[in-house]
Amino acid sequence: MLALIAGTGELPRAVVRALPQRPLICALETSPPDFVTADRLFRLEHLGSLLRWLRAQGVTQICMCGAVSRPDIRWQSLDLSTVFLLPSILRALRRGDDGALRIVIGILEGAGFDVLAAHEAVPALLLPEGIATRTAPGGEIAALARLGDRVSAEQAREDLGQACVIRDGQVLARETDSGTDKMLGGLPFGTALGGVLYKAPKPGQDRRADLPVIGPQTAARCAEAGLKGIIIEAGGVMVLDQTDVIRRLDAEGMFLWVRERPSP
Image 1 (spheres, rainbow, N blue to C red):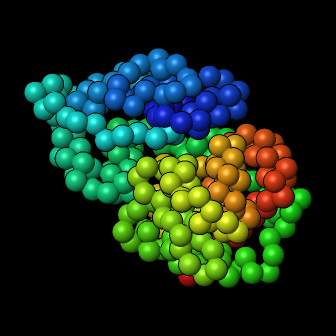
Image 2 (image 1 turned 45 degrees about the vertical axis):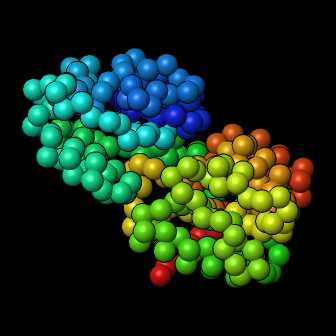
């Protein structure tokens, strides 16, 4: 049986809709899901009890999907089952996003669960390699893609975001913890005309959680910013409501390039 630890955003709903059977849905009280109903809300102080409850429900696989903010911990509220996990929880809270997710995955696996990525649960969330839109990128876009690769590697070393806006060999904006839509919305009017959104997983990250996502809102924000198109890594970026995304980009004469990232 599959359980989701669902966060905010569209991804949990997309996963639930695509699965043949509704999974059990759990969520942190501090980051409840926007578009699905949780069967159980929990606090991090009660993680051990949650894992015991999941086993009692027959859960064998867990998929983490959606954005989650780091919760404040009320140490006096730790239950006995979670006390034994305290060293791992403390390490996770001191790490960046990638390090914290690796530790959380380790906790889940240590409790006997298989951790399943959202794109493993729903492979159709990944588009095949190639040009998904009617408009194709021009010859100069290949150089921008290589620049995006370098920026992605830098952001991995700094444990920052998974996207950037690039144009004419320059980086106009880098994603932070606020997310891609906030980055695009923060571009001063007209400064990104003719630019490109590049989005890919950070090299070396564990792809069972926090795989990048784009959707219709991303396409709309890119169009508002005057971008030429979007470059995403093949097999590394999930696309929600794919028909709508492609329709919006086609209407604006923009491209979506699903690109195989070259080996470093």
